[in-house]
Length: 98
Image (tube, rainbow, N blue to C red; front, side, top):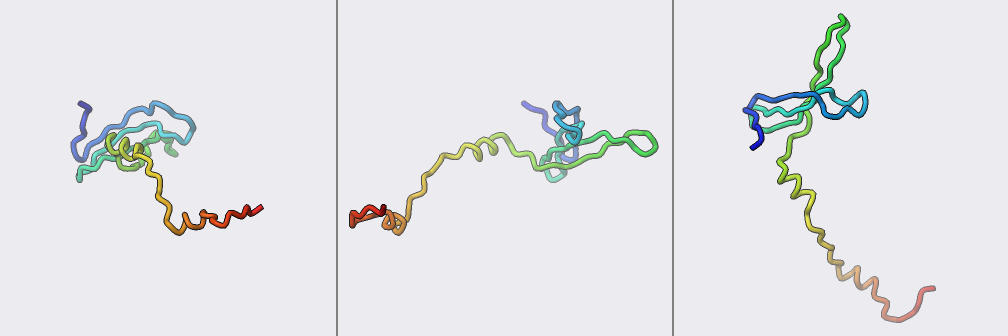
């Protein structure tokens, strides 16, 4: 079983991949007091006095894996053409238009 945050708590850790300078240095999740979990990103920045500080950003809500899987794997349903669309395709006089 995966670790579950308590409401009002979260975790941040070093980002596994940093593909460009604007990518976050830290990533994680936070659970708000209402119970909704969000992605959290952090950047290590330099202050004007030479020290470091962290800039944080709250991301999109975390979706459970089951929701992500079911949304991405919906069966394809071919739309049924309307009778008027079918009648436009019906060329009953047999003339070839070219």
